[in-house]
Length: 254
Image 1 (tube, helix red, strand yellow):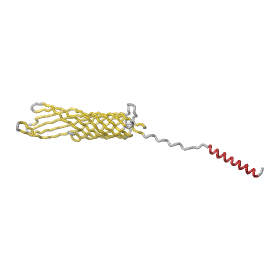
Image 2: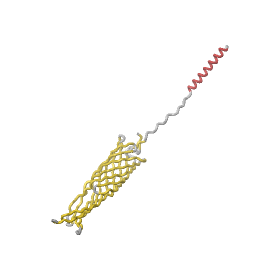
Image 3: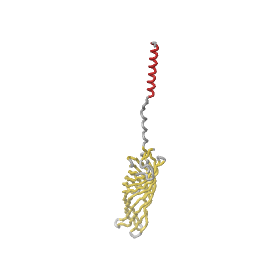
Image 4: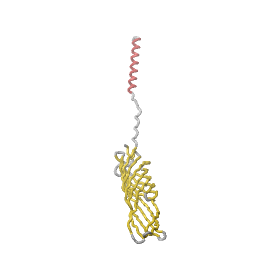
């Protein structure tokens, strides 16, 4: 074999070998990093369910000074559409509403005879309660709402009229539970699983409490004392239970 033929053969063999190596390299498996895992959807709180809690705050009234208000509430919320909420709540609050007032007026006790009569009034609002509907808007762990419904208040009223030197000439008293209405609103925040804290404002309007008035002559006449309005601002703390009607007990991923 000539020298040229030997070089040509060697070149051909070398080229075939390199081609085979290249093909083999292309056939090797390629390993790639796995795709990054998708982050889980954020947890959105579902407000549906029963809850129970307590409240404390302050209030002011037409016939009483600023007072402490404290008690408890129980209710149920239903969330829908998906951020709206409707619910119902009942609450009871003991109060320290009280007021004493003294006034002096000239009264004609006989033709042409005027005497100063001192009147002492005592008013106590012992407790207030309500049953209210609620409609609210939620976003995750926050909620704002409007509320309104029927309200009740227990009232004691006592009055005495007296003349200096003659003593008491008349008394009046009334003790009863009166009905009315209430509207208001507030906001709540889920600060821990199943626990919410919030602030609420309520405006109450009540009718009159009825009683009897008597004088030294033995006469008895009916009378009424207007209870008027009551305004309350209070902080709330609630514990939320699971929903017995099938909604998510604490949270759901949207």
